[in-house]
Length: 428
Image 1 (cartoon, one colour):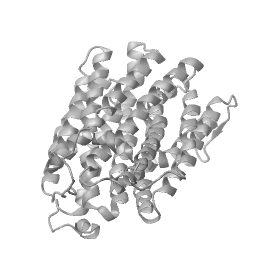
Image 2 (cartoon, rainbow, N blue to C red):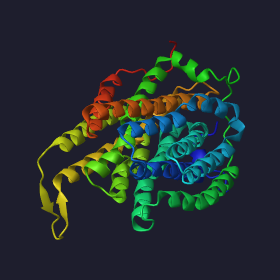
Image 3 (cartoon, rainbow, N blue to C red):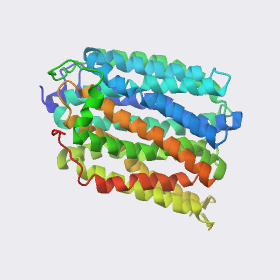
């Protein structure tokens, strides 16, 4: 297999060059997440339009996460079986994710809206196994960095998408989210064509030969190895906190803190914004010192950061101050919450890439797709369970800020557990 250095240099063609290859997959990943993440900004508007309770929000979160998560059981299998067509799966995944989100804007009732948005998540789930397999096989010695660039693309989409969508809805569309879904589908067609054109001009990395043909049960069979159990736990706990927050935090920001759509989009975006910049360095660092230290650090920071947000959210002290040299008044509580979410965002998204790189390090030959499948199945299972449990806690406590205590309680122990978790594939 060619070295990662030669892969980065490419073979003369612009589309075949390594940096173009990484950029195409990373930017496409980011744009896909832009379309999917817009739903977090739509959520408070949907809650208001249909007068939904916390139970309704929980049901929406579970349906969406299950729709996008459970299919990873067989998406990895499909990716391994169609390994010669990875370059085609990516643009098809993007197109249908955007199409279903557009159709959700045409649905007149709430449950068809949610069903179509969930189908968008299902289409989007077909991106990760081929994309990470493509990067892993073409850049084997820079796997952490390559996968981190891919993750930074998604982080950019998760951060900038809600921010931009919130601004567009507030400034131009008078919170007409349905009109936004229609307008956004037009550039999606052009983006699909661009991804297809760029990937078809690049060399296709050959998957490592496998001793047997991929089977649908390979995703579960990988759990025989302790390394995948520990990595699945890391992804589960991280996603429990992350996507549980995304499911309920927009309503908390809008109803408890009286933020408009732009404010909601900004703070949802903070959960991933700084991770976009830190991610590639985080991945490069893991290539040099190993995967354990970055993951332990990330889980610790996420847990402590969420506890800080929870504590500040429950304080009754209100302190206002004016920004020096301006007349802008800022409430100290809001500032601390904003800074804490930004700090959490350094690691909340980028840590997933190091976890996935660890899994690919231990991946059996020919089962790259199944390996990615089990990672995203555990991640999205955590997101589904997180939405369910956080919804129950909100109903029991009667307050949305309880989600931060719960998220921190789940994430923080992961730092200690992963100090001793296995990183190599050994017999169960």
